[in-house]
Length: 133
Length: 315
Image (tube, rainbow over all chains, first blue to last red; front, side):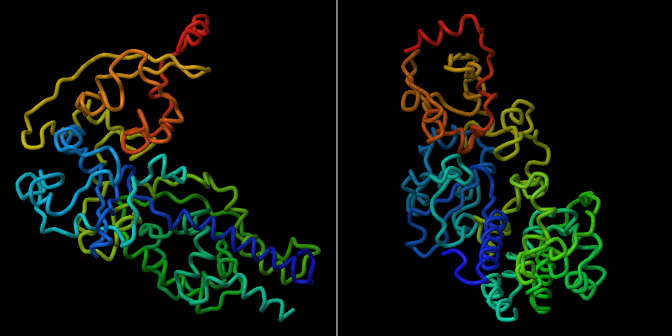
């Protein structure tokens, strides 16, 4: 492996530089969304829609945790709620507010379905995510 | 030598195969321009770039190709880059800056560092070619490795707008209609972790008025002012759990009895469980303040004389 040819030193240095650059550059491109932003991709990808981003911060300014997690039955786990559009139209889960009365209605598909296709279900910046799950 | 250079070029320029701006930027420019190291105009920061762009793209190309006395190494320290590569990277960075919103006040720039010497000067034994390749690492690291604080996300990169946060698709029209968190946080008390917002203080100071009932703005919950002290092993201060701050946000049924059995001594809680998202970790580390804020929970100083007996008595 070592000193196989005169260029190996330079080669190693170059490879090191490339790897270091890649590692250092990673955080710059890594997602850095809000702590607590939830991506829900239970059905979206399969249905050809962008996955849903739920911004916790936006909602907690306007509602107590209880309003969703007690009254509406949202489980404390990303992807742990079997939400679909029929349920939402029937006033369950998001549909309890996103009905055109308390909050804007469901015709604004892209306001929720806004993550890049293929984004996995996650709580962004959660301890588990930071530890690599 | 020439063959060696070519060989090395293949290795170091692997990501620049497309010879396009982003690839070049990621490889050779992001080290400094990503974080704004040593006065480098920061990527996507309009305030940093606007005055430079105002002097014209040609001037920027010249600076990028030849370097500047302020610390920009020629070709970003990567001698292998062709003129077109460097220009493509500059174009890419200018476009990113132009696309970003203008901040209210431009950040004060730190003084420019001493001009960096080409790497080959202090390379005694290594071949010139080797020096040339390591120049990516050697021309910038003096500033880079000692950057303050290189592993932390600088304040300017916290709470980015949805279109730049990495989990919203910038190609989606809805993304651009969403509120930017920074604008929402403007009048909220700050914190050092999580969203960088002290939510409990925000509620206490009435900066926010989250509805208790989704349809009734006047409804209010029953706040229970009752602290529970949990003695903990080791040197850490004991944990004070305040029902008050929790019941201002949550219903009893959110925690009891599924997560916490409402009975003294019935709950085994450990930091390991919390880190794994159980017990307090159901919220803390996901949306409530993260586990890095040790002293917000571990807040009761131990009575050292009594603590040995107390920890020994715990089940």
